[in-house]
Length: 322
Image (tube, rainbow, N blue to C red; front, side, top):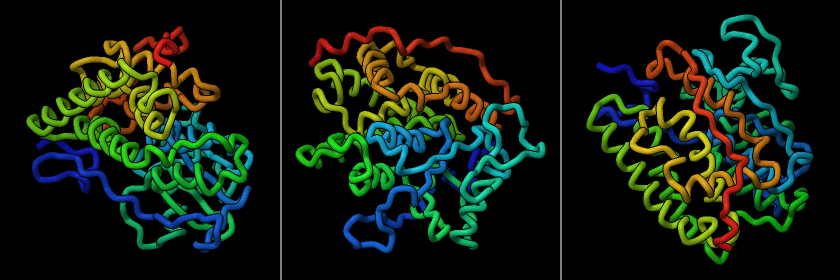
């Protein structure tokens, strides 16, 4: 029997079933929750490798919330002790002594924050985490919630108040497309990569590429998913696309095609990457070291490939669709 990467999240048919987010408290700016929106109170714990965490990093960046919400990046290599507040450069190997890089709590492992919030928590420790420095607990570990709160309730503290990633006029269609991208692309590559049976893998992998084919067609007509404006669904898709050729194509065996083989998806990826401040949120070294060194059930040698060579800074030509 093939070993599952996360045995507690595998069905009997070999399918990966992602665990639910455990902490879903809400921050408000109208006194409707015990957690008011305040600058400097909340801290974001993230991995630059994780696509879910990366979306929160991007929303924080495009809204201009860096001064209002602090952020700490964990080491991309996650061992049996989980996400570590260790120098993320790779100079300190897992298992070696290290000094905490967490400026808020001096945690050595993110699991300490989970246990401080719920001593009975025994599920997988995930990023992102939004931490309340006042009550010293996790407020939320759901990237969907965190992105929404950054967009809405923290707007008073944002430099870019006019940026709205959840426009009301496309609310229903936006939610529907976001669900499609999540089920078939964001989580779809994981269903393929973590499958432990051939048929389960093939079904998941084909669904990924059927979905990419649909998105390629959609993006042949408009610059972004919804005409000429960038919304949350664009960043949701971006976080998978930017990892696809370096990691998902090989490591997760999603290898029918590469993103660079899709003219519209590749141009769209470069267009988003070249938006102000986005390149600094993408760290391909962290991405590759995380997947290839953490998923030992898939890559037991932990050898990290040196390629592919990808240049996302070239002209993308998407302006023609404006």
